[in-house]
Length: 320
Image (cartoon, rainbow, N blue to C red; front, side):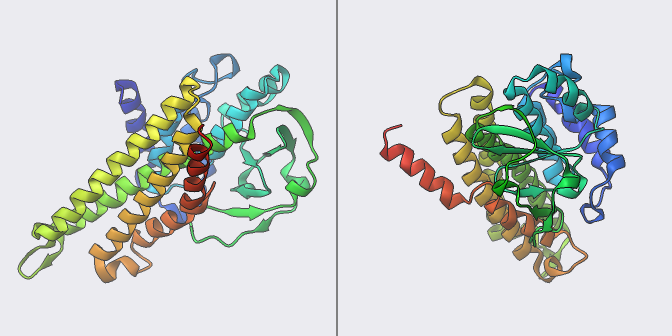
C-alpha cells in the first residue's frame, strides 16, 4: 500500500468515525466525502472534475466503507463513472461526470432491473445488450426488495423488460460486472477485517474461568486463521484490481476468484465473530448481526460463489 493510499485511508476513516450504519444514508456525510476527499471522482480524469487516479484508490474507500458498513453510494458511483468513461461519449461525460464527482448527482447502475440504493439516486444507468442508457428515477417504479442486510437498500424495477431512456453509448456488460465483483470484494475485505478486530478486542476483555478468553489457545488459533483468511482475501481483491487496471485478459477470471474468496472469507469471519461473542452477538444492540447479515447478503450479490466457480470451471474446460 503506497503512502498516498494510506493517507487516503486515514482521511476516510476519520470522517467515518462515529457513524452508525443503522442511521441510514446521510447526504451530508456523502457531501463531505466528495467535497473534502473527492471520493466520487478518484477514478475520473481531472478534465472531468476528478482526481485522475485509478480504481485502486476507489477500492481503498470501498474497503473503509465496508469496514463500518456505512451506507453510501460509492459502489454505484464507481460503476457509473467507469461506464460513462467507457462509453466514449465526450458530451455526456462533460455533462454528467463533474456533477457526480462533486457529489451533486448520485447515480445507480443496473443490469437486470435490480437496483442498489435507488431511493437516493438522481440518475439510473441501465446496461442492456451492451447499450448504456440513462433514466430519470422519477419515471421508474421501484418495488422494495426484502434484504437480509439492514444497511443496504435494494429494489426491483421493470427496467430490464423495457430498455428505454437516453442512449449514451456502448459498454461491455461483462467488464462492468467484473468491476462490480472487485468493488464489492473490497467492501467484503473491509467488513471482514473489522469483524475480526472487534472479535479480538472482545476476547481480550471477556473473562471466563478466571482469565480473558483470548488467552485460550483454541480461540487464538481460530483468530489467527481468520487473520490469514482476511489477508488472503485482500490479496485476491487487489490482484484482480491490478489486472483490471492493466487490461489483463485474466481480469475476468481474477474478479471471479476475488468474489469467491472474499465472500467466503467474510462469511467465515462473521460466523466466528458471532460464536466467540456468544449470546451478546445475537442482541440487537451489538453490531455482530450486521456483519453476519452483510456477509450472507453480499455473497449472493453480483453472483454467488457457486456461480463464479462454475464460470471458472467452464473457462478451464474450454481452455481459455
